[in-house]
Every structure is written in C-alpha cells, then in structure tokens.
Length: 303
Image (cartoon, rainbow, N blue to C red; front, side, top):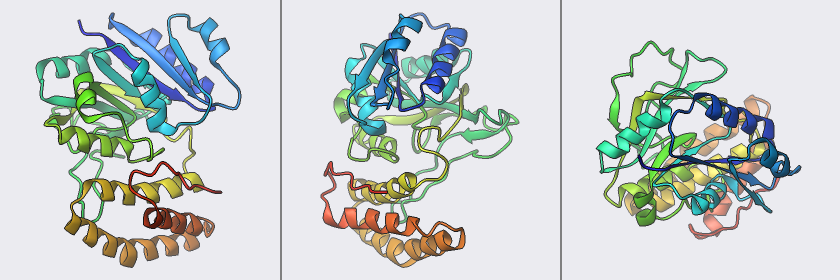
C-alpha cells in the first residue's frame, strides 16, 4: 500500500479547512495516509489551535502568502508519500475516493496525474468537472466537460485520458513531479495546474480523470466569485500560460485574437455589467506580460 500525502492550503478560512479535515476523519478508509495543511499567512494564525484539535495532522505556517502554487509546493516539499493528493481546502471527500485514485496510478504507470469527478457542494446533484477538452492554443480556450449538468451517471463510464487535471483535486505521482518540477509559482493563482499538466505531459506522462471517484467542491471560497484579484490573474495568467506552452505561430495568432476580439469584448462586458474598475485590471494584466519575462516572479497586482 503506497503512502499518500494529502496537501491542502488555507488562507483566511480556517473554519472551511476544519470542515475538510473533519470530512477526511469521517470518510477516509485508506490507512497509509499523511495530511499536510499549509497556512498561507492568514491574518489570524490558526496553527496553534489546529495543532491541539488535529494532533495527527502536519501543519506548516508560511510568513507570506505564496499563492496556490507556492503554498502547495511548500506542502509537497514536506510530504513523504509516493502519491500526493492536492485538494482545495474548500472540498469534502467521499468514501473510497483515495483508494480509487490510488488504484488508477498503481495500475497505469503512464499516468502522471488523475482527478476525480467533482460536484458542487451547494448543489450536490450538479457536476463541476468530468474532464477537460484539449487546449486550443490559438485562443487559449478549452471546455470543462460536464460542468453545470445534472449528474445522471452520464459520465460514470469515463476513466482515461483528459486534457487537464482539475486544481481542486489532483493526485500526482511523485516520480512525475521529480521529472517535471514543482508548480510554477509566478502564476500565483489560476492556470498553474494547467501549466503543470503540460510540463508533466512533456515528460511522457498522461493526465487522467476517474469518474468512479468523487469529491465535493465549495468553489471560490478564498478569492470570492467575482473580484479584482480574480480578474487580474485570470487575464494575466491566460496570456502567461500561452507564452509558456504554445509554439511561436500559435502565440502570434493568440496575440491578435486577444487584442482584437477578447479585450474589446471584455471591456464592453465590464461596462455593461457595472464593473468598469475591472478594465484597469485587464490592462495591467496585459502590460505585465509585455513588460515581464515569462519566468518573472513579480506579481504586479494592485487594487
């Protein structure tokens, strides 16, 4: 039985992380498990009280907010498992989840990452993720399969290659991490798992989804469902992802598409929907990519 390290990152929502840890205690039946929680410089340090409440969990406190990638990387460095199960702190597990994903990696050595079926916690009959379609690098767009569909078992037969893992829940083979490296921390938030998947695929691995495993996701707890932070990093990192993973011709087509179609459309949408302040975030995100190297660690976000 291979050791599994669960890694999750908390930022200012310790009660949500409590609910995750309680769900692991209630539903996990996999014996060879360690749990690592990284606190990403929350305003109030929850680690002292957590240490008392959850004595078998390993807690790490970062003095600065390292973002999604940096926080997970910190947990990965401390993990001792052969498989690493990275899950958002706003998720709750179900019976058999870990065993099913472990079996996938055990039986298919070519799989670098596998994600489970993801359903919305607030509407538990609705799917959030049943896999991703491949990326169109000319537009930097792809589709999340099954999202917002009522789950009637229509994807339950799906186990196999998908375009990308879902950052809310992905079990990763340590060997794949050793070959591809850790997640790129300059993304900070959004697109880092897609960049990671592409890098792992370039090492010869495949990315899978297994719809026989299930996790529930509360979604957007840390960032909020609409915020200047989200608008900035979604724009900045979509462009950055393309710079890092598309070939030169694909990049050129993308730049024309984004400049002539996407940006004007988004600006009109911001004005129409009463969010004109988001326009400056879009422009800042574009300028960051013009003025910074693709490996730059400068984040550039301002309210």
